[in-house]
Amino acid sequence: MDKTAYQSIDHYIESQDVDKHDRLQVIRKIMQQLIPEAVEVISYHMPAFKLKGKIVAYFGAFKDHISLFPHASCIEAFQDQSKNYVMSKGTIQFPMNKELPQGLIREMIQFRIQEMELQIKMKKSK
Image (cartoon, rainbow, N blue to C red; front, side, top):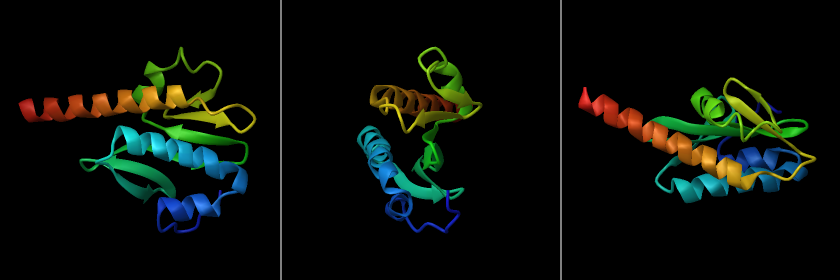
């Protein structure tokens, strides 16, 4: 992945190999649909969506896969549904030679939004 100073998510996507463009746009559209009030940002050289000052999730293109970085707690919560994918503490990898699991991505982002809303409520109640 090129470590260019990306100006926007569009710039990031355009800078990637052509075969990655559609997959990146699909993840972006899912996030736009689920959190239309979120702000698109580039953070750590990757596209991300920010809601109420906090990152919901990052995503990015790599040599043989697209990764989603929805937070460690989200990865943990979806371990059973994600057995077919390489996962680490805070990321899940979707290989380029398999169909992108849009339903799973949608569920993970929804989980992450609910988790963030709960954290905000808990902070307010203290």
